[in-house]
Image (cartoon, rainbow, N blue to C red; front, top):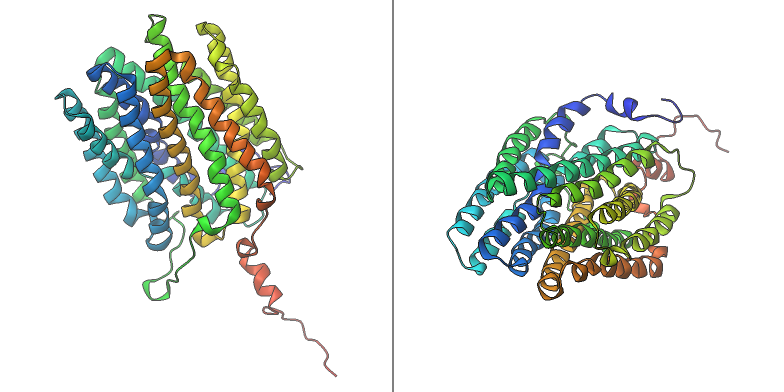
Length: 421
């Protein structure tokens, strides 16, 4: 292994492509679900507030159930959890547009959205757990893998919203959700079939109960940080939809959101190529305030080209915070609870996205898209205050130390003869 490995060396990790390719298709729900719900429900009800509430219901369900899925995956294995989850999610996503097009009450739509969000497959955390299981402890490829996964996530946020918006506005309002269901079913089942690369699971008789990853103080701080990141995604999706309606060009919604996500993706590629000597904790303390500053001007822009430029800048500032947060998890959490820890962070993104979609929808109905764009600033600002106040908790946990280090500390594994008086 070279001292500064690249993405090519990472992708040559044995078995990597067997879970990366199907995992990409199965990640689309996280990118397509919210915007597809917003566009469908706004079409059937004429209200951004109602659309935001239904989308928020799905996001809240993701936040509540994702850690449960992660904990079950750590305990029983990814495939045993993923197969029923994918089937339930596909059925729930198909049901939602049927209800919306039948003018079902808002409460019924919210219930269907909860089912769709609760069953969304946690492919991103599962892929990250597979990288952690296949890469040596302390390998420089760990940072590269965190960056690669962030880039992959953001590439789905480039492709997913653009495809969903195009399908919903050009084909049919329900086309985005139907496409999402097909991709989830196909990609999820193929990913579950790749059992060889999954993290090992202890036999039934040897399983031990592990404390929740949320008991690690640093994970709780990162969960708040990722709530703020989620507020950017949710606030941007709803507010950009409203903005393009206001200027009479709804088709530009997917393009503008794609520019925002492209900034995130390109910054993630560049960020992952850097051989960092600065610790991740310090990098996060620098990157997050820059994200807050980037969101500060969204509400004041009334031109599509200028909004595209500012959205690109916001996307560029998100990537360092995301990558660094996931990199810190490897240092803070024991391997046996790592999938759960990743799902707490992705669940926090979903919860922040849901709350922001709801708030931005209400504000947009009241005063237009400019008010909706205040939501990302408020969310990241509050999260930044929490991060700065509790930054001392982002330190490595002794429980997360490599097993071989703890064994050596107990005096086991020494094979050299020692003279004894």
